[in-house]
Image 1 (cartoon, rainbow, N blue to C red):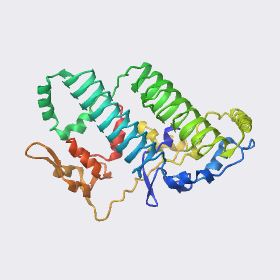
Image 2: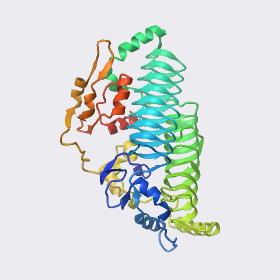
Image 3: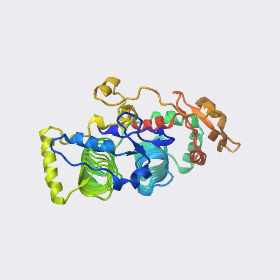
Image 4: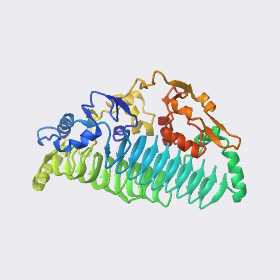
Length: 472
């Protein structure tokens, strides 16, 4: 609740620019990601004080520094409509958490390390390619409408597959090929049956919704819950890959060993000793921090990069031994740190996450609510989180033609050779789903759907992401 409510999943339009922040009394000034990076050297600083509460000093500093409308760094290309995009990712559209050389991503959450062509999916890692409406896919390609797939290819409507290829409607198989409902077929007969099944495109989403939600642990020990790979000693986790010793983790790891992580979300790579973090890696000894990378020994920091031994800093780049953005000598920093942490210990707030006053997000637009949507309005507001009560107004162009999902049948068909076709005129339409959510089909999406013979989606893109967090 505390940490996940700092991970927004919705995009807001402010001054005709996409923003991760809504306009709330807690938001403060916003600037573009490019301006934020360019102005890092000019960020303000504050003198550490023992007479004032630590969080009050931190909140005062934050209020003076403008926030980036999106969190982007590291040679990111063509990703104007994405957030939390790091290190050489490119061509990301309405995607959150795309890192490390991944590209061509649409409507997805947490796609890490050289993945490409990923659509409507959650927790896709380690060079996976051509992934559509999937959950927990690692080192695999051509995976459609499936959950928990490892080192496999050409898998559809299946779950818990390891080292498999060409399987349909299968569950919990290892090193198998040409199977349907876990029954082995000859290659020839399998291909005939596959062709028949793939013509039932109107049923794909219904089949996906009925897939088992339980996952097998893949080469992991002393670990329980769902979506875990090559890990050990993990308690209370979801989508964890190559982590040793951790508790309360959500989408952590991607193929590089991560150790000693507790109460952490969305940490991707090379993280050692972390507590109470969200979106912090690579680095080591990171505590109660957010949206930072290439760091070491940081405490209560946000948007810092290439920094070490910093406390309560915001937006710094390539700095060390700073407190509240002010530079200290190594000796002075250690002395100030002892004083600050001693006082925080006396105040019983050392190790607590950032207070509610420093949370500008609507709770029901964040990862916390996506993972557990049972939080009531009273629970949220009584804990002093913000909550969006009104529906977000969607800008539908005045001259746009709006069609309902039941009209999509008019834009897709089979030709005389039973090849799936989609009318490109769909790119000009605004589609309204059954919940009255509006969305559109974009060109790269249409190209992918046509290439793999997939049907037009019938629910809003955010609803597609939410399916990755439905566990029953």
